[in-house]
Length: 321
Image (cartoon, rainbow, N blue to C red; front, side):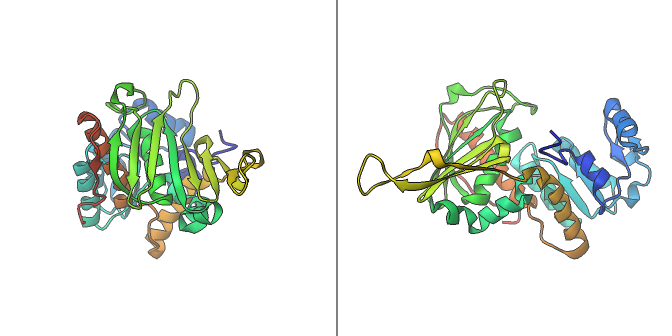
């Protein structure tokens, strides 16, 4: 794995990143605390954040905790300046909004680890590179697994990043839903998004016991781009003369170009971005409001499923509008 993801964990980054001094680990699991001491040489461990030695000196907290515990973590560190949080931000949208509002009230920079937002290649695609390469998107498809809340959120956020915000969301074929993934009450089911520009995006879950794929496939007016192997592979297919009809075009699949990406470095760059925000005021590439936007779509999808597949309009607003 390390060949493709040089920094796959927060621990690896905190060990290596020059902008951060890793001073403690709080975890209710004795095994996790033992690992911090044995494998990462962190002597300052505690079952709760408030019990860490030097809690009043902590400036940055990495929160890989369940959402309900996060306000208590804020209280444990009175001089906190920055937070890097894992998704989801809340067990409900309202809880996520409360967490964002509390960070804002305390003047804390909140970054969310939707790590594709930190990949320079994807940033370039979002800034116009996608359309320059394949033309205006006509259709898009995505696959995910191990839970809509757990993994589907990354693809929904990637769609927002590359193609635009969601206008309406709809669960499809609810009888095909299945449970899989680490988050309690998470589900996998097919769904559709209509973006504000009118583009339709279809999604289908995969059973990861067969193989993993968190992928996005975009068909444009001049070609097709596939982001596969969970983002590690980018494939581009361009158009040429159609072999069946004179004067028509087709995708030349036999000439598809494949290249490896550097998404395995994206999580480290998220730490770069947070450091630059705290030291120089640079804007966060994935702040709390951006992170919560995809979670609101997921909430709408679960609501649509409960309403027998009703198409629901979405409002991608946070507590501050």
